[in-house]
Each structure stands twice: as structure tokens, then as C-alpha cells.
Length: 72
Picture 1 (cartoon, rainbow, N blue to C red):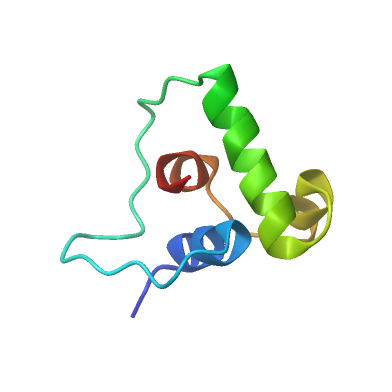
Picture 2 (cartoon, rainbow, N blue to C red):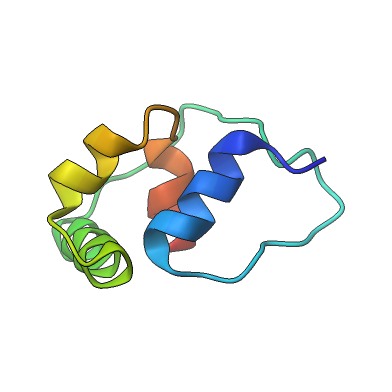
């Protein structure tokens, strides 16, 4: 069964289903936020959901910013 956070990241970013043999619902705390990467992530969310990125995230109650940033 796929992790809910990863499923939501895939959907919010407009990606296909992520497949790999690792525990796909684990989130660590090592993440460096880069302005261009964050802008690309929010643009991908806006494009995939046809709404503002903040509205899309508010509508999705369970998500991981780490998985969103890593997948975008």
C-alpha cells in the first residue's frame, strides 16, 4: 500500500505514481530550501491542480513538504 503522503505529493505535483522498493512514507528532517526549487514546486502544484498552491495545500489535509520538494 502506498503511503498517503507520497500519493498526495504525486497528485499535487501532477506526477505519475511513484514506484520504488523503499518505505515511501518516511520523512526525515534534512532539507535545504532553495528559492528556485521552492518556486518550481509551487508552480508545479499550481499547474497540476489548476488553483493556487496555497489553496491546493489547504485542501489536501495530509501532505509532506519534504516529499513535495524532493519530487519537484
